[in-house]
Length: 228
Image 1 (cartoon, rainbow, N blue to C red):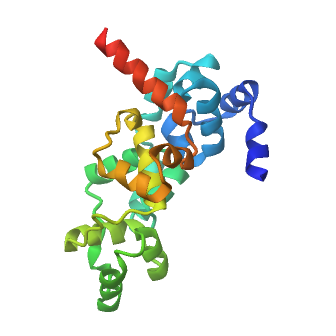
Image 2: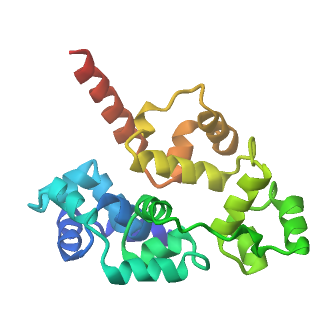
């Protein structure tokens, strides 16, 4: 009930006021770190880009600024902390996207030390990786979730077929952020998992706090534009 009341407080005017206050106006950052405002913007304007434009900002200029060169301070922070902090944590602290963090970590050859796990920790990961998320495993081991993830890949410990509500919602939000959610096919594993976990694709999308009708309309409109 409290959530419904908080949603009702958002108006187009309020959304625009809050966007104008932001230092980081990119969609990716606000989707991850300012979800309440992001969802309200999508609700009232149809997309984050449209809401930013409604405020009088050049959306593509904002995107270019978000891809600005790394400062020496940011580079130093990443180099000092990538072994102990996850990509999510570094992205939040530096106000950058996860893709940006991963791209530059690989570019600078900052490889995670996967020999950090002792035999007991390795056994724990192998016994529990199917029923626990990487974040849960890392918390139990007081470790970096990135290290757990890459250790699993190295050892071939794949979570294929393991879908739960949390993973479905995460994947839906990722596709939405990439602009690919409207093109989802009923034959894809995510679609089947969403129906199994939530009862329908629509309920799964709404469970991710997205507006199903607007996404469907947007997908149909794009298809019509392509045909004409």
